[in-house]
Length: 149
Image: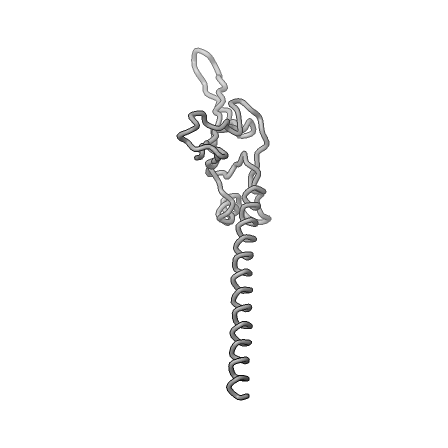
């Protein structure tokens, strides 16, 4: 059983100020706050089935909580759009600017873990095949010795 969360967040640095002129009030300065969405965050209920648990797991973030955020650094001599278009598939973005409230190292850790698992499985299969070749070769050698003997 799992609970899936999407977090909405804003950054003070991305706040845009819009000045408008009103004949009665004069110049008015308004702020427009951009809200960004995170990637889906899945929290598994350990040892509990959804039938036995009516209470969802607590979200990772609380409303109004301040946290670190990350953004891909532009590569030298590339525009921001070029950098974003060349991100690896494992780097999951929840919004157009690829602003993240989850550490990107987590994405890298998942890729590393999956790759390590795949290489372990492949190595085990390869080892089993080599072992079987030695067994078959030994069996054939013994059969041939008995036949010639």
